[in-house]
Image 1: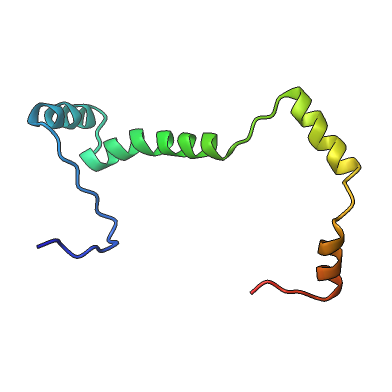
Image 2: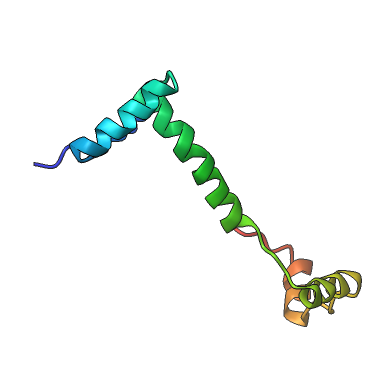
Length: 91
């Protein structure tokens, strides 16, 4: 029977005994518990991966196109203008 899913902050990790021994030894050399050691290595990597995924890097050409559109935006389509004047609100 599957266990109920709870958000208690617990994460289970299955390791080969030799991998756990390596991590435990490294943690003890740094005077950390195993959780602190793993989090210290994993969290900065996770934060960097998220930042990379959320960052958009444009070429110089594309950057100039965006700036040109901001300085001279195209006219709004007539349908959009009608909806805005009618006071349409999204749910």
